[in-house]
Length: 173
Image (cartoon, rainbow, N blue to C red; front, side, top):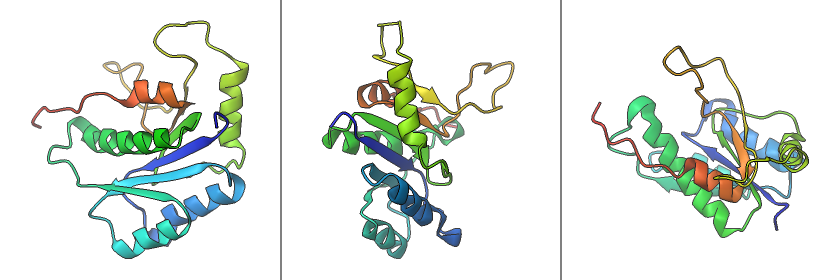
């Protein structure tokens, strides 16, 4: 269903005050039709993973990479790619990639982002089929002036795959 949205939460589970678990419950309460995918590591606590699975969220676990890459980018890339791959199996129309240590507390944010894309189409018919919604931050510097953080990306499923299916950083740091 092209209207369906997958929320991919990637990264290590935040167990303090059951933050990641409570975030999933919040998303499910206000967005019951959204598919929630938690993409994390095999090193996570099995009891916590069982609680997360009991919410109906899909959990994907991967062995952590031997080389984290610059700024640990490989952790983000591996867990995000795994989440997108799973979301595509469900043929969702849109994907929101966020992190396990963050919560988007506007109950209508995901639907709102979908409406932004639908109501403000891209006039560039090049690589992407439509706009991407990203969360801007004050990160960056003179050497990275257009830096986009990994906090949140939202777009069509196809565009999110194009945007985030990049090669791992194999530099030895």
